[in-house]
Length: 319
Ligand SMILES: NC(=O)c1ccc[n+]([C@@H]2O[C@H](COP(=O)([O-])OP(=O)(O)OC[C@H]3O[C@@H](n4cnc5c(N)ncnc54)[C@H](OP(=O)(O)O)[C@@H]3O)[C@@H](O)[C@H]2O)c1
Image 1 (cartoon, protein in one colour):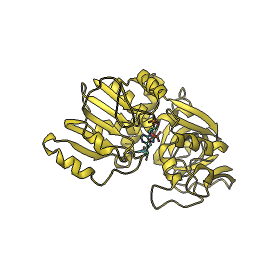
Image 2 (cartoon, rainbow, N blue to C red):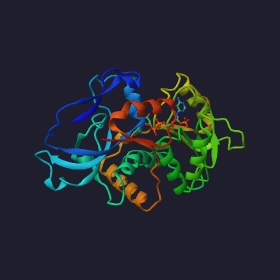
Image 3 (cartoon, rainbow, N blue to C red):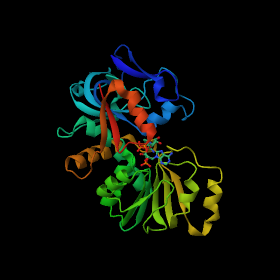
Image 4 (cartoon, rainbow, N blue to C red):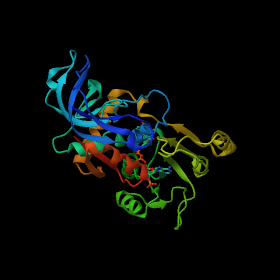
């Protein structure tokens, strides 16, 4: 089968397409023939080699696929064979014609939802759902989404709107992406550093931060009293060292900061929400925003576009 491997961490040119044997599913795994492969922000972070130890050259990137179950491990119910599923493959393995996934990480895809759309929403909207729950967002509160143009950010905007948020500000570096985010429910547009030409709320009840990096303390200052900032991703890296002291300096504001990872949510709850996300997409209540569909062999080009920051929603690879 064809697969994309990382031969050298760093720029997208370090990825190569290779021919390798189709894997055999271990006891509690299934083998999936991929139809759609999501290119996530985390894939780009791993490829750059900035996510720390644990990743080796020769790895196949990609964590989210949709496709048909072709074979099952010894302990897996054979009725899975032939079903079209969404699957989380872990932090690797996805960019290939076939991939393995643990049976607990499969969610059947409704017939009327395309595989491309399933990998655009399956991980992102589930993260957004639990991140907003972690922030205890209530109807009537204001929300700021940093890094809203990615698939997690878009889903956060849509879910915040459905949750009755009164104002939904977003950061984006692109006027065009900002206008599209407005169509999806954003009410105010901010630059990446938080500036705006028009009057916007100075403070927010909830900040969902997918960006992290050096600007985090400045955004912390924009939390209203009793406000909650949730760090979901760190596409711009870790916060500076004075971040903790900045939080303490505003002691009397009773602000909260928390990280959120889907890994902390029990598998069954994740699968339940994911199935609800797919049903909401079928009903037209959530919109899978697909930036581009590209052949698997163009994975490096997909990553170049990610690095340029020119993506709205998700790039999807097809084998
Ligand atoms: N918590 C979890 O359970 C979980 C699960 C999966 C993934 N993640 C994390 O989520 C992140 C990826 O999410 P995603 O795929 O939705 O995001 P993404 O598409 O990689 O990036 C989102 C947006 O952030 C903006 N951005 C990019 N670089 C920036 C920078 N240096 N400074 C400011 N803004 C920048 C870009 O928009 P503009 O150009 O329009 O500004 C970009 O579209 C990764 O960090 C990944 O590890 C977390």
